[in-house]
Length: 114
Length: 110
Image 1 (cartoon, rainbow over the protein chains, first blue to last red):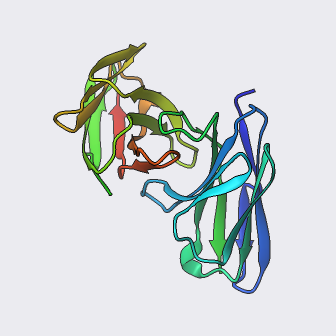
Image 2 (image 1 turned 90 degrees about the horizontal axis):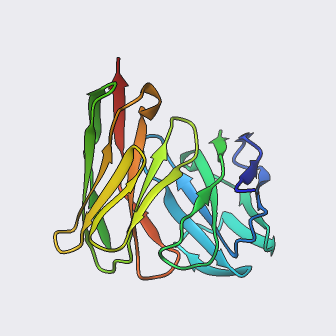
């Protein structure tokens, strides 16, 4: 199983809502990532978890709150988002948190903030 | 930091060969990835180069010159399904960090 799954596929939320994005992998990978991708732009790294501990936070605003409940799951909690946060949110995983590791991406959650 | 450049768009004909270039200037380097991303889909891994030279994988090949800060992705026998965005990504020595170029949108025409 080389699949990373993400739910929901699409999400529309208001600026006062609280929602969560979910990511799951069953490849035994110990590193998981959140990226944000705007249209016609490359993915931008947000967070990296290694062995269920947050190892990189790319100065992401606190309205995005990541959580790694176990080695297979990664959540991104959203609160008080802005319209400019509308984007495709990609989850990825790799075997370990080393630079040369291939990252496997999920299909993404397309988020629209109204 | 990282500075990565690739052409924005390229067009090629079905059955032809196309080369997508990527140049980079980085403060730390631990390899270069190429990913393919179809519109509305997630990036998928194509290749990884950490040593100089050419890596061939079927219709796709990737080349790296570390001294020149240069890589290319070579696609042979182009098919319509190869129309996609091709992302060059440099792996930082800070483990877990890869910086992506803006991507090259390739359109394959009949």
